[in-house]
Length: 412
Ligand code: GLY
Image (tube, rainbow, N blue to C red):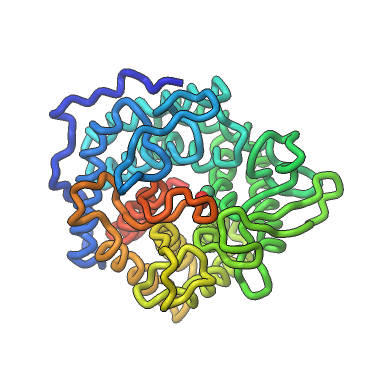
């Protein structure tokens, strides 16, 4: 698919370099985070021109996003893979924060890209439809009521629902449903794809979606969290009998280690599922995952790429895991009563975010068009190591939004 050609904001549509959020409420965020937010918004604004005709790749190369590399016959710069929606996600956050129409005008044509992707069934064999359609379509629908966006997101939900396997009660993560290597396998990241299902039940009245999301989440709670509160990255179920079989990793240090980003996905994903279900066991699951994550952070609060590494290690950090964790901790805290646990998560979220802003952001790096430096995509395969990445940037901006807009309603 080629990107639409009507994505052409003129120069006067480009947001100014000095964006200030329109929130006139007093916020607890300090001047440092407000400055970090202004810098992030300015970078997003500059990227509107840069990304006008193509989608950026999953990660930067030497800290600069380039055109998405072609893959499997899909054209360079076109809309495929699991990360393209993080760019419109950043645009919609920026629009919501500032009210500046330039962000909305840049995000709206991308709705057409995503509608076309689902209609033409382009690279849909993935559970990541949740990441993709929540940010590219549910977000604008929530903000502007765009009907095309709603229709595309509901259609994507049907494709996601087709990946729900009984009797295992899980959503298959990767690949064609008939691929024997992938059948019956899910991954911890899948928790972030369930909000699309919950949302679709709300807007269509069809309870199937929410029931599948809840059952899948309960299966992950019961089998992917180990007794010590670490998580497996991936897990296999027998697709015929539904029996839970074994855990394994793809992107972590080892099958038995705790991949930092997976643990962060778990914190946020279980907390979001609680938002929709009020199932207290899911809030408890989020707390367990959060406690392990926080107990294994280095002194500067930004996780190593796998939590097996601790202070004194020269292992890479994963700034994206830290950004996701901030959002997850904030979501989790928002559902807890006043008290020590709630305060622990709020303080930790603020410490991690402050460290990201001070030490990992691109402030002072004008050569970069990312928001965050020092992320890791897939270290065992040497992909995107010590680079910026689209999801890290999105969740950093969401984390800054949460810090400066208490009560902000997530797109998830
Ligand atoms: N969801 C894929 C990743 O976190 O790398």
